Length: 456
Image 1 (cartoon, helix red, strand yellow):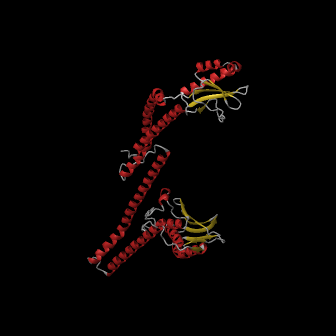
Image 2 (cartoon, helix red, strand yellow):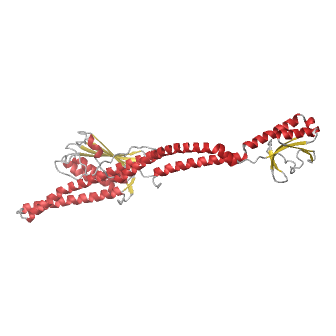
Image 3 (tube, rainbow, N blue to C red):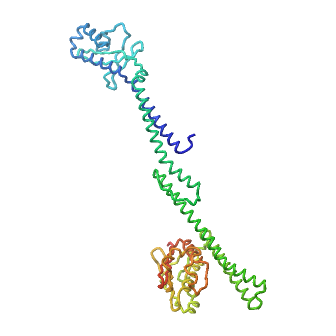
């Protein structure tokens, strides 16, 4: 029955209030048992009688009849003891004897004692000047506690309890809804996801529930972003594969149908099939490489890398194509450049990709410059070109998979599937580094890579 969080919260508040009311009733009952009204009245009579005797000790102690009058008036029992604690006088000689009182440890004005029959007496005593001790006692009243409780307190407690219970149940219902409704909203959203009507849940309720709601919204946003990325990935892969597959299929059909009936035509068809198959093979390798890097399973062979020598090798590799394109290729490296820990082949892959892109997008008479320097606890490597630049709206997506700003910038030919920069970014991050780009259309582009230095 009480399986939902709301019902359990409501029930828990009701139980807490019920327990609190029971505790109050028990405490009140114990108070009535230990200190009822009749006992307090009896104590007042005893003290009044004692004070009256003390006010005129000579008169009352010399005349036993006067003590009898006090006994009758206040309904008490008066006893006198000598210095040796022997009984001298008792207004109730025929009643069970009351022993000499013990020392008043708690300094109470009125105490209790048992007579020889085991009955309780309330008493107070006072040492007089004649080396006599005055003791005034009265039977402790037997109070019908339950009757007093039922007659005077039971109905007010029941009435107040019912009112408090109703108010607490209303309050408990409001609080339980305040806590449970946002949680149920999260549960409903989780059960119905994915849905076209799925929207962010407004944080409500206690701080903890609001934090849970925000975490749920953040999770949904990440899931949707991942799904969108996967859909784009599948669409991009399909698009990139479609073109070479169409070419391969078309020219293979030409060979089968003998449409390419000359040696030159057959050679051209075979060459295109070979080129497109190689393109697909490279894209498959890039995709596999990117997947391993993103999953953290790429095999990085870490060792000390001489960055100056590595960059010099990149310059030597691209000097011939740069001279052919009439592009100046420069290297600026500090003489005391420290080594970095990394995979030399992977780092060479980074700079090969970036320099290759820079040469492709830099017109004749332009320049491409590589520089490296120590920047605090990092090494900063920059690749700068004087090419056509990248539009500002394209910079945030430049490292996305399959993203290409303009596939026709290099003479109208497609020169990749848009995976190069994504791989570069993953390799840099696998080395615990960072990569950034700044560019301005018509004024070139600069890639900046920061790699952590080797600890001394």
